[in-house]
Amino acid sequence: MFETLSQRLSATVERLRGRARLTEANIRESLREVRIALLEADVALPVVQALIQRVQARAVGQEVLKSLTPGQALVKVVRDELTAVMGSATSELNLHCPPPAVVLLAGLQGSGKTTSVAKLAKFLKERKKKKVMVVSCDVYRPAAIEQLRLLAEQVDVPCHPASADQDPIAIARSAVDAARKQFVDVLLVDTAGRLAIDQAMMDEIKALQAALAPIETLFVVDAMTGQDAANTAKAFAEALPLTGVILTKTDGDARGGAALSVRYITGRPIKFIGVSEKPDGLDAFHPDRLAQRILGMGDVLSLVEQVEQKVDREKAAKLAEKVIKGKRFDMNDMRDQLQQMLGMGGLSSLMDKLPGVGTLPENVKSRINDRELVRMVAIINSMTKQERRHPDLLNGSRKARIARGSGTQPADVNRLLKQYLQMEKMMSKLSSGGIKGLMRQMSAAMKGMGGGGLPPGGLAGR
Image 1 (cartoon, rainbow, N blue to C red):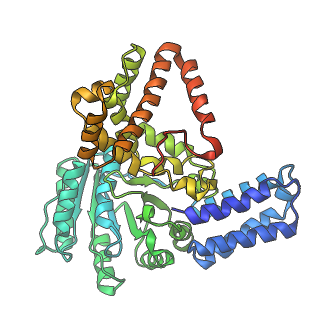
Image 2: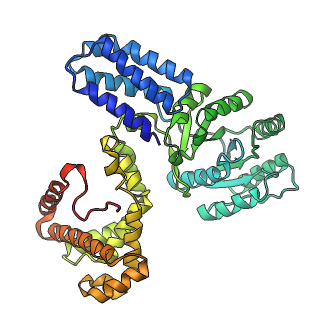
C-alpha cells in the first residue's frame, strides 16, 4: 500500500531536506506536488484540501521558516498532519462491559466481512487472550454460514450453529444466550451484505443493532474501492452508530487513498487493516506508524512486533544453543529460517517497514521478492535427510536430481549452496568469535552491497 504516494512524497521531502533555507515560494511549490501525489493516490478531494491547508498554515509560520533545519521541520509537519487526518492515535476495541461483549460487523457484499470476523477472532484470542465465539446472521448469501464455520475451525474458535431458514435476529439472540452460558468474552456477529446500499439491508442491520445493543459496531470496507470506500462508510455511519472501521485488502491497494480518507469523511476511527489473506492477516491500525511509512521513514516498531509475534521462539532457542555449542548449521536450519521469513509476510513485508526503502530504485526493489525464498525452500525439500544434514555430499549428479525434483535448474541449486555457505560461515563466526566475529562478517557482507544492491549470492529474485 502507498507505493506510488510514498515514492512521490519521499522525493519531494528529500529535495527539501537538504536546503538550508525555505521560502514561502518553494514551500508552495512542494505542497503543490504533495497535493498532486495525494489526488493520484485517490484521496478524497475534501481530505486533500484540508490536509494541504493545515500543512501550509504551519509551514509558512514560525515553526518551519525560523527553524535551524527547515527541511526536517517541514517533514515533521507533513507527518503530523497525515497522522491527524488518519486519527492521531490508535483506537482499540472497547470490550469493557459484562461478557459477552458483542461486536457487530457490517458492510457491502464482497468487502471481506466474513474473513474479517475470523481474522478478528484470531487476533482477540491470541493477542488479547479472549475467549471468542462467532456467528453468521447472513441467511441470504449461499454458503455464508458454512464459510464462517470453516474459517472458525481454521482459527480454532467456536461458531454458533445457524441455518438459512432462520430469522437473523433469532440467530443473534440465540448466539448471545449460548455465549453467556459458555462464559465467552467476545461474540463476533457477521451480518448480511448487499452489492449496493439498499433500504432493506439498512433496516435489517438497524434491527440487529437494536436487538443486540453491541458494544462495538464495525464497518468493513474494501480499500481497493478508493474514494468509494469513504463514501460508502459515510452512508453506513449516517444509518448506524458505527464505532470504527476495518479496512480490508490493503495489500492489494497500491494507492492508499481509502486509508487517508475514511477517518476524515466518517469521523470514525480505522481500528484494523487487513494486510493479507492469511488468518493472521489483520493488524491494529496505527496512524503515526503509517504516516512514517508513507514518508519513507519505515515502521520499525511494527517490524519488531511482527518478529516477536511470529518467530518460533522454541526453534530460535534450539538454533542458538546449537550454534553456541559449535555444532554445524545445516540445510534444515536454513529451511527453518526461510520459512519463518515467509511466515512473517515475506521479504516485501519486512522491507516495507525499513527506513529508506521507499527511496530505493524500482529495479532494486523489484529484485526483492518472495519467489526466490519459495524456490529455495523447494530445493531444500527435494534433498534427502542425509543431504540436508551433510550438504558436502552434493555432487553434480545429486544437484541435477534435486533440480529436477524442485522444478529448478542446477544453477539455482548452486546459488542456494553459495548462500548456505555464507550463512554457515556467519554462524561459525558467532560460535568461535562471539558477537564481534559475527559483526565483522556482517560488515564485510555490507561492503559487498555496492550501489544499494544485495550481497553477491543474496536473496535477489532473478
